[in-house]
Image (cartoon, rainbow, N blue to C red; front, side):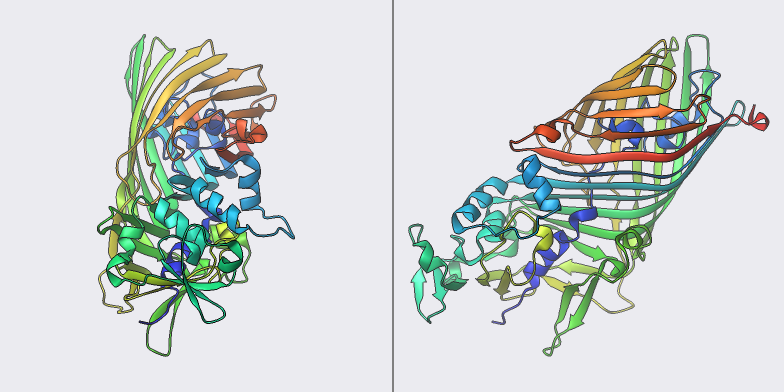
Length: 517
């Protein structure tokens, strides 16, 4: 049996890239302040990927005919297990921080068992919206979207943080050449001498799929060129209806679907762009081993200009109905399509874990994990890498979602509403459960608009978010900027459950040229 680090590289090498991944709600900074609610609120190119019917909606004659913007984004880190300080230290580990003691590792394993971590990124490089009274509304945008989420089952959590001290291994090998039973009352000074854990009875050893029971790790990252169109099809005094559709060309940057039902791997696809530092080397035995080594390019270059490893197309459909000019009812289905992953695809195979080396993670910052933390040994490599250029490509569905929302606009001063965002599948990066939102906007004056609300579900379980945002508009409404946060509770939260996020829009312009009247 050959000792390898395959399983470690698969799990922790993947998570080491998680500084850029996401939860799927595709929020612009104008929507983040409402917790992502946008089905009946979103306007201009902010409606792309949300509800294309809104491209044709005009609330009054002052609405701009032309809107364009650059460098808008939304980034968030969320966990229903970690407090604000723990989450901040996970993202930005302090210098000189000491690692967990053995007792702290036991507490960390219990704390993270069956909990979720989600990391979110939407960066719009450029967006454009043109509205015409006869032709309807046209929208275009270039956006990088990434959605990452991980639910860590109890067995995997124990091995992650305790390493060879996990109860799964009944025998510990010590540095003095002796071996001792791994009992619950084993003194810490003996555990500190251990360098490996072993399952002495082969029939007690579990497969990777059994160890991953209750865990799910998913990622979907692509660059999106979106073109959408909306048109008003009914225009009566007290009722109007708008329909919209969009098509987007997708360049796949990353894909992970790793999940087990406890008996077999129900998700086993893995592909990352080489720009992210993912590759393979061949060992002396001829085994293809995955490696993660980031290139010298800047983080911005890696995020915005990563090399594509897949191509696909997606479609969006939406409807927006306006009743008595104040009540808005909308619904949409977005991300209907698939991506063909043409290179860099690994299929994960099952195996049996007998031995492990390493004391596990020394803090919650899995971003800093390395092969010295854990090295697994089994009877089969979890990764089956196929380098044959003629091998068939892997096609996966996009993480499709359905949105249903309703809102009421009170004299252009208040707009309040509710919305449900529902996952249509469990593909990479999609929501684990429906996201339910209640919120709205308050136009304080012509220049300042505040947003807030509450949201629950999605990838955060029963943790309740309280978002808040502010948008500032110049005198003639030609320039707009703003910032929003998904959860202001996390600013003061010292208990479990946090969502640290920021959405921003710096360069957003509006205009009413005569040729569009």
